[in-house]
Length: 181
Length: 310
Image (cartoon, rainbow over all chains, first blue to last red; front, side, top):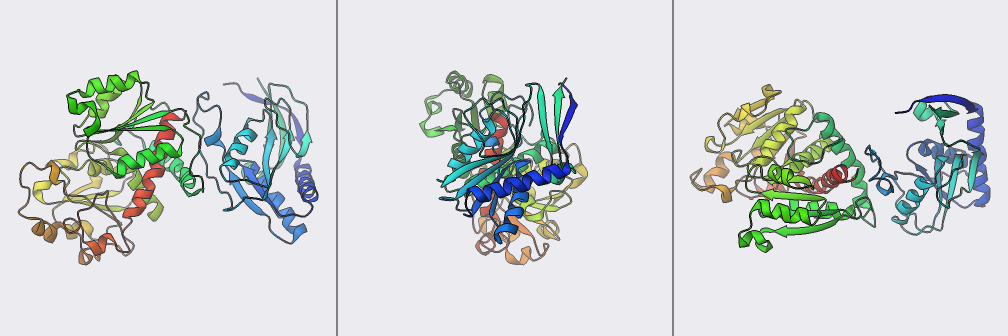
């Protein structure tokens, strides 16, 4: 196992909060006030989606629908990874046919997680649209997938790891770029 | 379940592994509530149901579990297999192995049949009941149901009542519940209680109690598990008449009233109504017998996922 060492801090607490707000506002603007369904990808996509939902509720005076998506049952590397990913609960609102879906995740990297999430969503019906919101886009795509809403786009090296920390899970809001050694 | 290839019994599972299976089962339950009840996780894997004994719920449950995970499930039952032409278990195993099955779910009247299979094939073997030895997925789904209703597996009083001698369900449940330090009261007619049964559990054997009094077993119980009288395994008479059995060992409303007010009543099925359980109890408010069936699909999905998914 390789260990991680801190390369640099990309964002501090106030930047994280401001960026999430900006993304929520952009989503509202692009969907011109139509109600959207926010689906957080387990794990850090979930608190992100929750916070964006809260911001939208303040502006819309109406709570947007919210759900959790676990993509482990849809991974394309199940036979390749040595460890067995723990499957977590998926909770999707009962009828999301013909709705506008916002998929929320912390880091967009190879695009494989999003591919799995799209497959998962297809099993829940036919949505009006599926849009992708990611906090950090770090490049290195292995699939033709791009985000509609991006918190921050950065250039990274292959041996770097982007860690998004959120209060609900990690006790702090921050983004660090680590390096495998 | 890391690095575990087969599920042969509860006895050699750790508490941690049992909880892992139950946690995954809880997550997988959601799949069965979707409009499209299927995920692609085990696409391309083949699961063979090899049943040498009659079964509806266990076989169907494994079949549905496999199909909800997109595995290809093939059923072989005794009457349609080459076993009826005289093929041995070992030859059957080698044949299935040559077809590159990923998993074989086996039920057999001989204790240890799954263990034999595990040594002879490359497939993951899942024990779906071997003789009077073990029935691990039944104990797991019982634990799942208990945890759902009671919020815990520890520190409960569980009465297991009925034909203990012939019951693999009793043994697997005994192993599982004592691992979590719950008190298990085994209760039956003296002829249906194997002597020395309390010595079967090595660790935590102080949690095993044996009684022939139904009232003592039920007094203050959190869970009552009734077992079917297995007439098909009885070559001689174990009690004078069914009517007498029901009078002494059958669960009726009056007896249930001695248990805790929030007691749950379980039965692995199939039930003999009017033999070990009264109809109004089986269909009554404390009964979770159909919940057990629903849990069975989720638990078996979890077992298939954990054995075949990685």
